[in-house]
Image (tube, rainbow, N blue to C red; front, side):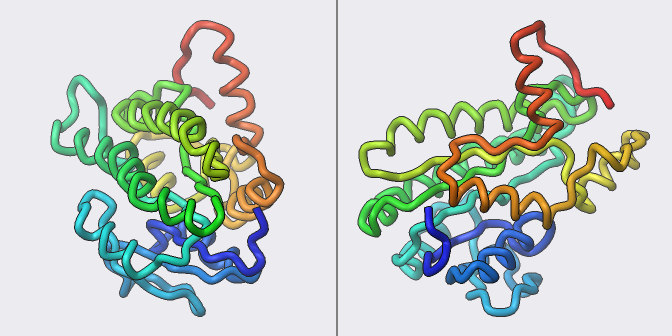
Length: 237
């Protein structure tokens, strides 16, 4: 997928990895729709700022009307604070599933015809190695990412005929404020050598997208996937 001259839509660009995706796409010569529930918080000079709530179909439809030239869709927006499945708040658990799974699915269902009209294009879903590792303290997030991994593999098969590349970015620990806040609350110490800088991750992901890769992993997630040949295991450092 050639990004020079492409038109990309990135969800959740008000901070963290989404911000870096939008900035790096612009650097590579793409037009960028930078979206968030509160676009006034987005600081990506050169991007077109758009209001989008991926859990609201009317909001998605409005953005699709505006952004009919999109040929790259990056599904990055997600709620990461679901807590534990057995003892956590059900509203938080539902929100985590709504954003990671149903919100991503709604974006794909709406934009798939647009991508087809524009030559096929590409979809990049931001997943997590938590899809393969139980994370005590936030098992709802792990379950939602597992569901999103299945979703990604499913739509890849469904959209192959229209020529749409569907890629999964599956990182380990991204050095965002969200991660550092969670680690502090959980009493975790994060060794610096296992945390990947979000700017580096965005570049790795877009390099992989341009190369046509269907899964993009970092060293942490490579190890997590290799462990799937054995019994299920919990997250550990």
